Length: 222
Image (cartoon, rainbow, N blue to C red):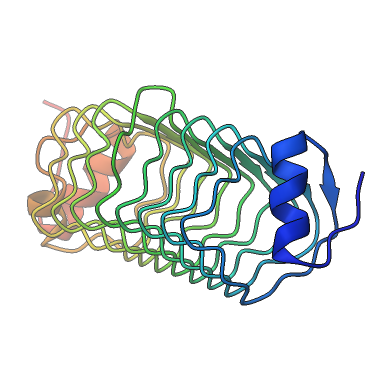
């Protein structure tokens, strides 16, 4: 594991395939740089300008990317574990086969993501207040994620498997949920608007009962 103190050091480490530990390069300008295959553990690139950067096949663990600008970045086949992406901007980023596990993504902007594939992973991530408007995630699996108050307006979530997710106060305006499996998810407060917002989704009998109650219906056995 090598020590890194400058942007040039980071570029050299990525080029040479050397693992980087505890680099602190907050607010560093790394626009359009090639960090393909970077292995980064710990440290911080909070607020860094990473627009258009190549991070395909990168392995990033326990690093802070809070507030980083990753617009149009290429993270194809990258693995991010325990990374703080709070307030980071990934609009227009390419995330084919990317894995986010145990990441803090509060308020992260993920609008307009490109290249999502069936192996794209969101697992055990905090996505409260995240911007996921108009994202196409059809057929994907999202597990153990907190999407409370996230904005999913206009997103294509058809056939998505939500496993043990929190959807309390999640904005689902014009969201496509046909075939989306919400059984086992925490839907938060059920209101008279819930049936319209969840149109086409799969829910459990318990969730269906709560929805009926919100509509003022009484369900009785024949």
